[in-house]
Length: 228
Ligand code: BGC
Image 1: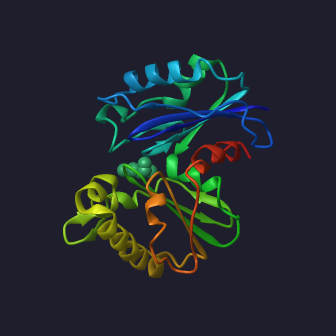
Image 2: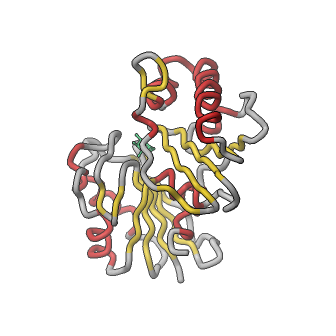
Image 3: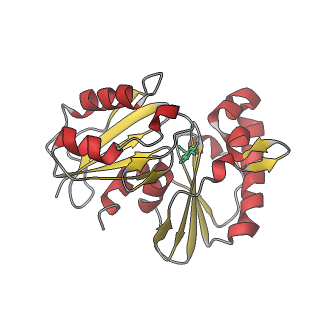
């Protein structure tokens, strides 16, 4: 069983084909997310992205918004037209293979969690992804990103990429630490995983003992586990 794993992001569309053991069959490929990022534009870009890849038997997709039964409900950093878009069905029709789609932070989490106790995954990229796991089970679509964190600002407005670019890495790191301190006593997780493209800017941050920075590539590896 070879799986085409796709990660739809606010700045890039990424894809890789993995074998049943999670070994890559060829390169990971990436293109910029088209703007405006309508479903039609993203589907068109994905078709070009995956055309040269190795053959596959099934498809997993991580999507930066709420996904229920393969249909997208929102995509704050893409386009309003994603409300009600049949993502899995459209890709299944295009590829002729079965497709599973889930929120991107959930897919990323599946790639890194241990499956023991409560584990929380935050992804730091264009937006802020949030995925909660209990005993390895994913609680889907908790949209913490758009809740108020402090003052009138949401979590994503404080620690999303636009904020990082505005305030610089030093202040952004401090904000991430404060966000962790805010979430920890609410969710009482055993482990916190920090992933996403901006997690690398946390290298110099003093993180709590139960927090781990994970490689962004997990966003693609988790696609395999969507089928477990
Ligand atoms: C979305 C989440 C998504 C996160 C990371 C947020 O803006 O609301 O659903 O997981 O960005 O892409």
